[in-house]
Length: 126
Image 1 (tube, rainbow, N blue to C red):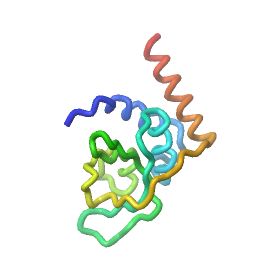
Image 2: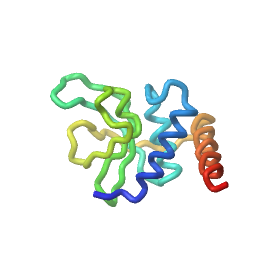
Image 3: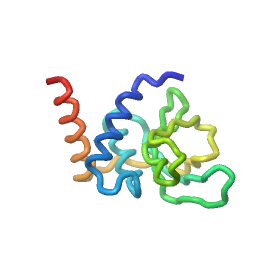
Image 4: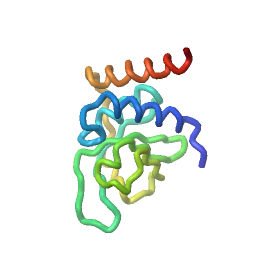
């Protein structure tokens, strides 16, 4: 499946990596909020459950593309080096367990990432 906004996800990930301290660790809420603000994808939260494991991570956040039935997760690699930097999974996955829908929030860090992203895009067009 081709996702037309994948290049934007890469740009967002790059801005997060250069702006958020210790990214991707403990940065899922920030990343999901940035994706929501830039791409309009729904904010969701729940558990990350590695395949074949009883270990659970509570309080994880990611985005949902309702048109394609996909979860978009820019911080899955915080759990394991074998996870992709940009996780794209069908909503039927057993790795992410949606438990709630999140409301958008405002934060100086989110604003910093969006400003960084804007600067990166502007520099590319010069």
